[in-house]
Length: 143
Image (cartoon, rainbow, N blue to C red; front, side, top):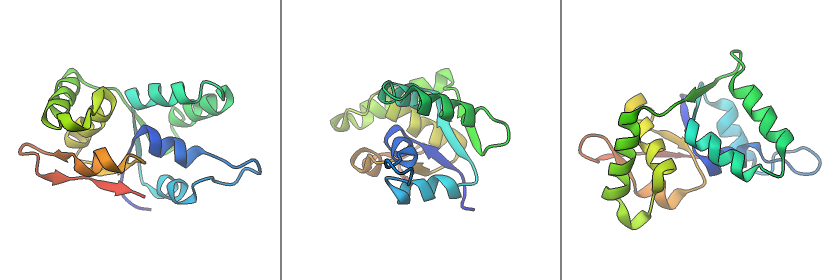
């Protein structure tokens, strides 16, 4: 088992994607998800995942059931008002990235929870973001 990881929308979707014969479509994402000691799912990420799974309601129901099953390693994380404020600060600081609220919240939760590993397919944005009081801490991108 590796340490905790924050799930971003693209990373979570890739980790859950399956081929028609039920094999992982992106095995490296699935392994990163499966080996994390804790998978933190920000509430805004879950809402965005729901949007992308609007044609696959069974997959969304399964994901929600897993996230809220106390026997799993998932932790659902509601944003605090301070996280939303910090997300907007990230959006302003890294304005050329056009982060938006969801990615900004992932960065804010990373700071608050001191979890710097992010399961993401968005290497451009999360590779450029720096977190911490002086915007000096890089994020470890998985896979």
